[in-house]
Length: 141
Image (tube, rainbow, N blue to C red; front, side, top):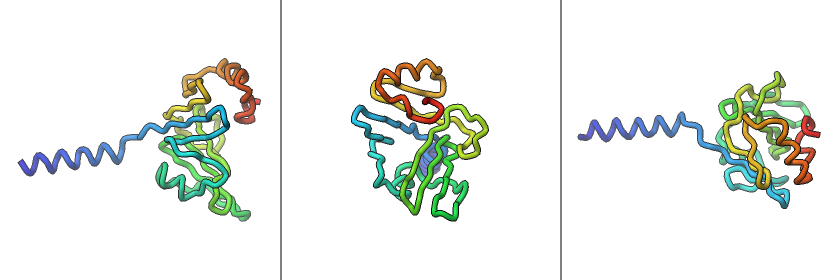
């Protein structure tokens, strides 16, 4: 009986370690960014993101104090300057830009009432334009 419980414990531990938790990203009508319910703003630090998403891989450190990180398994790129978050990017369709990991973001992105995922088509930009959020990224402008 003890062997069965030990085996189940390690099986559960393995699933928890290797299973990707669904990341939810929400951009609200009052211009608030939430990741898994936690507000991300100009006071968010690198350590705050590590607590939220885990330890990223350093992609490149610049002499200016800027650093770029990748969450390769999550499809997320993170930039910091002197320990403060500068930007967070979610890769849906990698186009060769080495500043982003090749893996697609599998989480959920919600902009007000519009859901975006890697299967979304360019027509979704028209829906975002109705929300007056036309410059979410340079590719959208």
